[in-house]
Image (cartoon, rainbow, N blue to C red; front, side, top):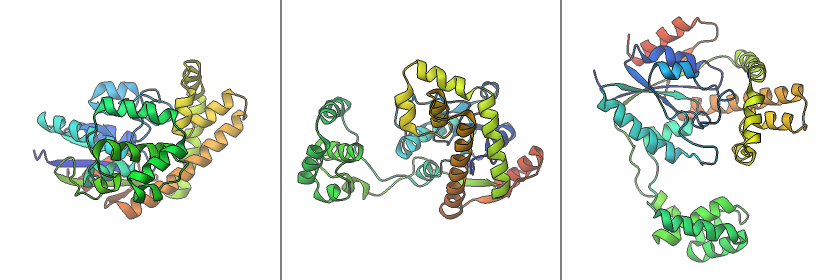
Length: 309
């Protein structure tokens, strides 16, 4: 078996990636690696389309539940974490099967990201505490003195990005822009075989509406209520996660159940449109149209595109 192959199953939300990926894994001698920006959070289940617990117990899955709500995921984090996971999968004479709709995550893993410095954790913690108590205008002025070009590209009120740029230049001695201009190196080597699942916009719209109804009927609100009771609402709000914002608003009385479902459906449709556009223009993939096809037929078509028979 050629262990240098990397299989990736991508597509917009509601195209059936999760079910197809589960059906593919065993026949490909593959282990599933999450490539979804919301399924990596251990507290989020029903609203993310995450594989069911019984499926995750049946075969190896990686990076699902990797982060807590308070953590901040990024394409860089994903590329590093997935690279390590894929190395371990290959060491077991297995293949990685990436499944998800986070195109930027996938591209970071495939092409690599610009270099950023490895910063001392204690120094970072010290600076973070200092930055948190300082007015953002003061931070931007400090950045302007050390990295004028970087400061000019950032809004003076953008605390998160200003703080990050200031952290890099203060701890490494070089501006963030300099680091990002350095040559990139993919976290893993290998031959990529990427398949995009695609359905028509009309079919996607119907699927999304049905999934919204299912989520609200099968425990999404209860899931969010537990997070609210545990004091996790601020962290959840920062994610701006589709469905979870609406469930929070429902629980606080800001919207009715019907309004929450309608908003969730509309936001999910907008997300799907953005994903379709991104995959069409930003990633080279074989396309499998799967609107009305039975699961077995879609799986067979994907295997053929992967070159797996």
